[in-house]
Length: 336
Image (cartoon, rainbow, N blue to C red; front, side, top):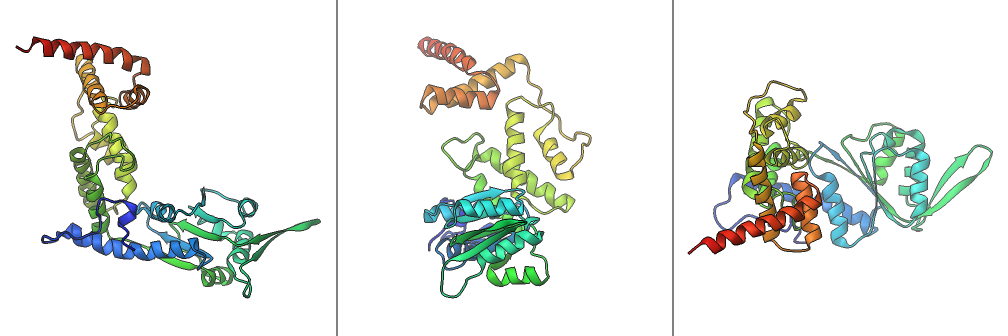
């Protein structure tokens, strides 16, 4: 269907006409396998299947792939992450009996005997009817019944356990394990670094060259200590660490912050931090302000970005904006 990898449109997963690199080949291999996941999501969204259970190593963008596929299809869905009780699951299905549900980090839910019985009823086709009656029985009270016609997509790091009920669940839904190689994840991260960070939206707080430096550091250090690559280590931890360091808001070098994340312990620093003087911090803030102002847009939005990147209040933005505009005008007037 011409999809690009993980829903991004920068051409990831496509081999250029010139001689492909190892990263190009890894992205193509990854995209071909991701196509199977996208197809299983479409199967549920378009009502060809009642359910899909996707599991595998953490930090490989399973959730993003599922949700971006649904969004590309224009299919509204109910997303629920974290702990859900059996009654909570029943109430969730009851709110939208014809809906598509994405249940994230639900390994424990699938261990629960009552929850599995609810899911068996929700996912099991009953003859030619599209309606599956989901019943919740209560002591000394009438049973609750949902005429369910929707679908369930579950995402977990854990595989479904064996046993009669688990085997019955597996027979009702597609059960896929996703375990990309470190080479494939590294290639994807390098591709994303070329976009800048954050990947989505118009705002790029970290430019591609800096993203590439952070990405390569995480890849190199992960290999050294023998831990598997996790996209969150770069996108949700490493790049925010770099941004905080660049803005002069840390006592520690960003590389040491990333090392502490990878090792899971506080260790002696290996990299010299850059301590900014008050004057240097002021100049750095001015450069951030100039960059934001040069892109244009609403002043309110500029002030919010300035606050996010420097920690200063919005009032400081407007005060310093007037000051640097006066300085810049003065410098321009001084040029013969």
